[in-house]
Amino acid sequence: MTTTEGAAASRGASRVLVLNSGSSSLKYQLLDMRDRTRLASGLVERIGEETSRLVHTPQAGGGGESRERNGRIPDHDAALRAAAEELAADGLGLDSPELAAIGHRVVHGGLRFTEPTVITDEVLKEIERLVPVAPLHNPANITGIRTAQALRPDLPQVAVFDTAFHTTMPEYAARYAIDVETADAHRIRRYGFHGTSHAYVSRRTAELLDKAPEDVNVIVLHLGNGASASAVAGGRCVETSMGLTPLEGLVMGTRSGDIDPAVTFHLKRVAGMSADEIDVLLNKKSGLVGLCGDNDMREIRRRIDEGDERAALAFDIYVHRLKKYIGAYSAVLGRVDAVVFTAGVGENSAPVREAAIAGLEELGLAVDADLNAVRSGEPRLISPNYARVAVAVVPTDEELEIAGQTFALVDN
Ligand code: ADP
Image (cartoon, rainbow, N blue to C red; front, side, top):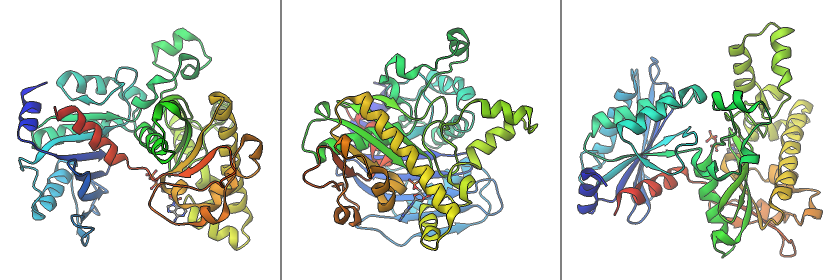
């Protein structure tokens, strides 16, 4: 333990600031880990543009009015300083001795980082070394870390990696069947993402079933704008749908998910597209948005209700892929105790849940229409009593999980 960690612990400081830095955005939450409450949260978007916007929401005592700032915020440093000012206006300044640590979401931890890690110069260098496998994500995370270090150099900063939960995948699940030397030279393998969410949700599902995590096998379907599935056996991830990058697997809001890799050669040879153009096509212009022009499931359902066939086909392709993964992961796990839906679509779209589980009675799966229709922010079962396998909805909370993992590391 470093002296700064010791100082935080000895003061009895219990607040953790969680930072999630994107290429042009910064999301933050301040939590008190004594009672796991959220003190404030906020989002700075369009950093570097004229139209930057900060929305800050004080949440002490059950949710205050949001405040907004508009106008150019040139860089992440200015964004974090603006967020710090908003927090200070609520009496939650980052100079407070109550602040125990800053927890950073870091997308790619490669094979090296299997646990949340206190950030040293050496750790930061290693995160930089992973930029070639996470060119869209790690640079922004690094900027966020540097910015926070400049603001509070005395405070422990902790990296919580999206890939960490998946490092328990067996080698036969993590390796692509390509030439081993080429793969190893370029660190090409399946890493998986959304790990913080998969870890949190699989644990909460065990609680919902009133069992220890070691005793349950769970299929987690994290369906947000990005989407991924994981198979978790006794608390350990054994398979997940995202790979070297978040592009593999399920149909997502704007990503294709699984395709024949030869599609990319075809696009290059026949359509004359460059690697960067194909990257943009598959990551930003595919998935639901590529299929029907919308990536918001609410809008897609509204269009289906009006008889729109493109929206209906997009929905069917999305659900078909989900079903394939539920079947595959049932086979991988052998025994399944629960299939659990989470994130924006998973938590809110009853039609997606119903359609994904429909026809899977042979796998012991069924959804109760009344339970499925209930809207709630609480973890809940939506399967009928007779079903052999539980189907559940468990809201994810990546910030709480990052704060919890961060605090566990510095509070000793
Ligand atoms: P992100 O991956 O950006 O964190 P979220 O987990 O917040 O995404 O999920 C965002 C998606 O959730 C939206 O694009 C939308 O498709 C879906 N969504 C949000 N609310 C609803 C709702 N009430 N009904 C159906 N889908 C919803």
